[in-house]
Image (tube, rainbow, N blue to C red):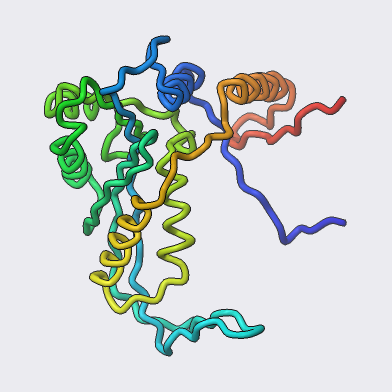
Length: 253
């Protein structure tokens, strides 16, 4: 049955260095860098920002769930502003370091870096790899040079463009979204920040490292599928002047 009211979005990864960048990130998750195992005093940090977390104060109190009744949240609300939650996740220790900021940017990100790099065991680590996406706070060689200039034992590693899902901190942010932010019923930003930090402390007491399901073998399969799509695009191009790319289904056998 056709269901035209439903849709699924997708994005085509066109980073020319997809294979090399993704392999580096996946290798770090397996504690491998340049084909060599990481030493015991080398660490991998996954970091990013969760932006625009709003404080929505519901006009009527939220009703807790009861027998055969789900939680009821009033739709009408007053807006109390928004903040950003920056987090650095130790991939192999399952430990989160977070902070809240009115906005994102180079300074808030470097404040997070300072928070992590000035405490042990990271301050005396041989190397600390920072896995980040290509957001403006930490984009490109300039960001990598800025990080290393401040902390010589820090190495910035970027995920491929349009592949920030390789960044493990995104898994933590999805947990925050489900367990902390939703449903959003906060009287102000102070309450949002208190709840985020309280959850972070609780999480660090019980968390275990994520078991990534996307492996180097899956990366090879993804690259092969991208190659097949690119070959088909050359045969199914739209008329000149249209910037849209055709979505081609994989071949069936």
